[in-house]
Image 1 (spheres, rainbow, N blue to C red):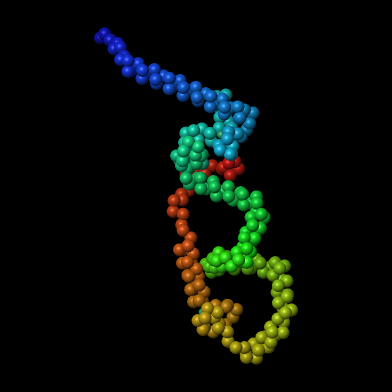
Image 2: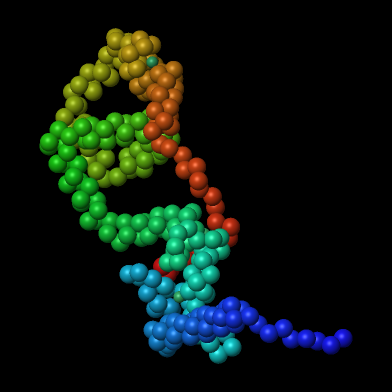
Length: 254
Ligand SMILES: [Zn+2]
Ligand SMILES: [Zn+2]
Ligand SMILES: [Zn+2]
C-alpha cells in the first residue's frame, strides 16, 4: 500500500509551529528557573529558596547528579508537603487546608514558647487595664474561668493537691492559723461538746452537711451539668478537621 503524504494546510502548519515554540519556551523557562534555584542552593544542606518571607527549609538531596528539594518539587506539583493531598490555594500554596491549620498551630505554639514571658506580661497588663476600666470582658473572663473549673473538677483537684505542697500554700496556712487561731480553737471546743451548729450546703438547697464537703452531691452535679452545657454551646467543634494521611516531621523546619 502506497503511503501518500497529505500536505499540511496553512492553519495546521501554524499550529505545529506554535506548539513547538510553546514547548521550547516552556523548557527554556524551566531551565532558567532551575538555574535561579541552584544559585541560592548550591553548597547548602537545607533549601534556601524563598517562599514569601521564609525559606523553603526542605532537605536538599542529589539524584543522578542533580541537586533537588522534595518540598520544592511538591510545591511545583501542587501537592501538600505533609500529606501529599492537593494544596489549598494558588501556585504558592504549600499545604492542604488541614495541614495548613496544623502547621499554623505549631508555629503559634513555637512562638508562644519562645516569647512566653512577654506574652504573659502583656496578658497581665491587658487584664489589669480591663479590670481598672470596668470592661465587661474582664468579668466575662472570670465567668469563663468559673465555668471551666466547674466543668473540670478533677483537674482543679489535681492542681490544688499539687499546689497545697508549695511553700506559698504552707505560708498561707501558717498565716491563717496565726490570724484565726482563736476562732478555730473555739470551733473545736464547740464541736467536742456537740454544740456546733449544723452547716448547710453552699448550693442553697438547705441540705445539712456532714464532713468537709461544701456542697451536696446534687448541687455539685447540677453545677457540673450547667457548666458543661454552657461551655459546650460556647465552644464550637472543629468539624472540618481530619488527621493527616501520614505524618512527616516538619516541626524542625518550616
Ligand atoms: Zn525547597
Ligand atoms: Zn496536607
Ligand atoms: Zn446542695
